[in-house]
Length: 321
Picture (cartoon, helix red, strand yellow):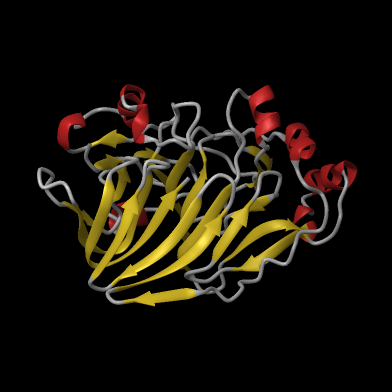
């Protein structure tokens, strides 16, 4: 059992930029490079293992051969999350994701609840999160047809370090100038409500999914999503803060200044995303060499790996189910 270094799949959605290649070392020949699917078994973009016994394998195939790597909590033998970097040079579409019940019945996929950690944001950047007031199908249809949807949407200012939990059914849209990490259910179901009348590289407008969208979205007034104080726990050599805990995943932000120790138990795999800096992960197995990581690298740690030690100077996200 060894730590798996992952190579992501890339996506060239029209709203993307070049920061993932320029600043995060993503050697993916796509322009724009909107998303990198860092830890994924989704058929639309599986990750590739780049080290050790499984070098060159799709992560999908590794986990099919070794479902025990996922841990006791994972019942169906499939990686339940998808982890991404997203570079929004332009506004994303106004969109919504269905819940599990609807998606599995109608799309044969999971639903999509997600969480965002804002790595960086331009001054004045904002995103869309829910509605300013309660709406109806008719109100929304008229607003889309007349180009007045904006007046119904809640706009939220965004700053570096902000976090947003986005449950399925929440209408949303990441705004221009935002770079973030996204942790979500393993799904690629998105219903576009409005796309600013943009055209793709072939001169065609992207498909909207209004009827499906209104069927799954929460039309009540959105909750206040202003950033609340977060508890940061300080230890010798590191600090930790819990960013999100829901039924699908748990996400911590770890600031490593010297060293950080933790355990990967048999219950669940863990994922490490390096946002800044560099370091290495050591295990108690003398036969395994330390695995180095740098800014932009994502690693999967199989369930049952045991005691681990991160040594370095880095900001990481640690994800588990």
